Image 1 (cartoon, rainbow, N blue to C red):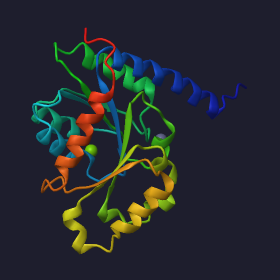
Image 2: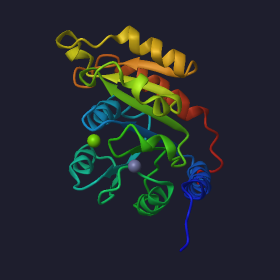
Image 3: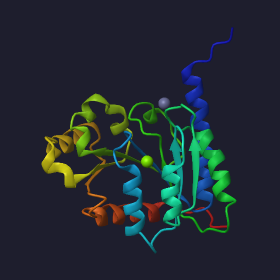
Image 4: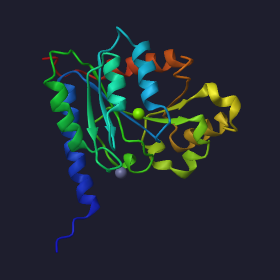
Length: 225
Ligand code: MG
Ligand code: ZN
């Protein structure tokens, strides 16, 4: 019997992720990996972000879900090119899936895509261990999930470059302590950016959009061909 260590699988994933990153850079595409629990508002955040960034970036999206294409349909309704990955039970995306999905997007029309956002499967655990080839990882936490998540799931917060606290319009109806979360994030990951938004109401979206657009511009495009 052959036993494959999880470490070896992750090493293979890291190599594929590095290849993905080069492919993105070669086309001048900035890659973002959006992670967070099911129901934290990732798709609604994307819809609001794309409205705010209209005319400033040309996004494409890879949607990761166990089943169905509800989120991909929402992106199509916004006119954003999208590929849906159905993981059929797998609880995270890996670099191999992203390579295949990017094949589908890259060949798709002559879209001048300059930002690829991967909406990962809703999960705060193993998404932390899989580099997809992104330039930036953003973790989303909604106020309705509770303010203890950074203490309970530290890895994903340590390995993200930004935290977006969502559903701020619901804050008065919860006991969520924003300052506790900000403090926990600063302890776990002092360099991370922290945003607090209501994607539905639009509050805080300008700051997030400006920051993201600036991060995209900072990535050197190897070639736009
Ligand atoms: Mg979603
Ligand atoms: Zn998983």
